[in-house]
Image (cartoon, rainbow, N blue to C red; front, side, top):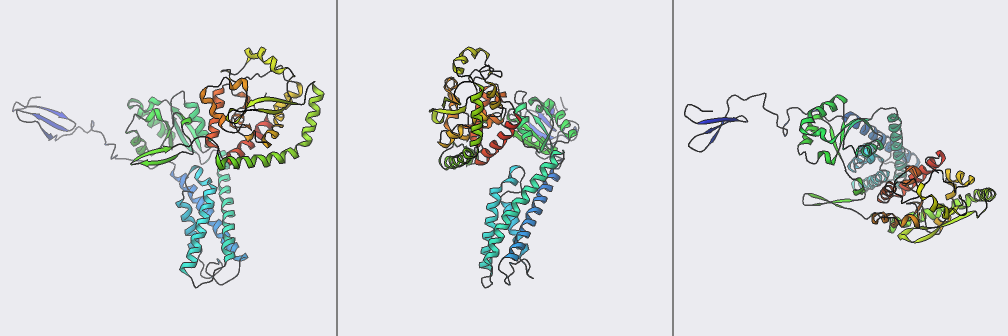
Length: 503
């Protein structure tokens, strides 16, 4: 463009660039093209309120009310049962310190993050620690703030015990009520999934496991590209989406994408591409401003091992005594059904790849090992590491019944008693299977093998790939806790009764 002075000028993003013999200068354009101008994402003109906040605040209100009532009832009952003296720490007194007690209790509980969403509200160990800290602080206030006033030790001890009991029951009641209401489809967060097609099923399964979301839709990773982004956010607005789960590959190269979610009032949550690389017991430390995770080795050692071992030994000893009549009855059935021994002992690979003899009730004909070589071609496991066959001709009539209800595993209580196995852990595999292991598979041999495990309650014999089984074993090792063992054992009972995937 040529102006009257012979200089060329060009309009560029609201400024006029004037080129002359001298250095170029920038002059503001008087008339901006309003249609072409765009809002700066760093200072959006309109930001929606965070969606789903009423449900979140309603949960917090219910928890605070539940904890307040529990603390009040605990101190009231402690005042009635404890030593009766004239003290403001007795709730029935004229100058009751109940507001102070509630303020300290609720404040400490909130400071420890026990009103947050997810598993925080079910952190019962953390709740007990918060109650203990509350009682200690109240005791210090009683002695230091009013040193001349009498205080009932029995009242404090009883309040401590009652507060723990009432608060735990209250929390569990709220949690149970929430679960029942969510089964009816209420107080669920509508969410959206953006992920690659190959990871979509796994990510959807993770979301549904939380049992507090309603998955309203999903899209491919390219839905967040510049050309598709507007339509994607329009779809999420129409569906009333509160949170969006996005895989790492779908977001890692889009620097300003979080601003779009902020403006839409939608919570953005990132899903890992490979969950196997994440261990929940990892700890984060800051190197300057950069988070650095410390990942603990996924093995059960030290005090964890001895807690698990004591639990196994005590339970195995009790069950052997209780199941003695069952053992005798099953032994009689096996003896009448087919010729051969009652028990079957097979060499398996256990902790640190050591060999041991596993005990089972015999469910096959006596020459089953020799017949397996002839049946290898009919192996239903895709990778061939394990041998599984749905209609195995080697199984006897009573053997099929025993396998359906996993009764053939009962003699392994003896293996648990002597420390060769545990109730929960990776299944000990025959030598033939372990010889086909790849190097990474041997991580499962670094923990005590078990009668049942995450593999068994997640599909049992329906799992067609050994890689799936190994991934479940590694997940169990990484997530291990005594509570997880109890959950798997209870789930095993349900799976066995329903005969899910057993043959």
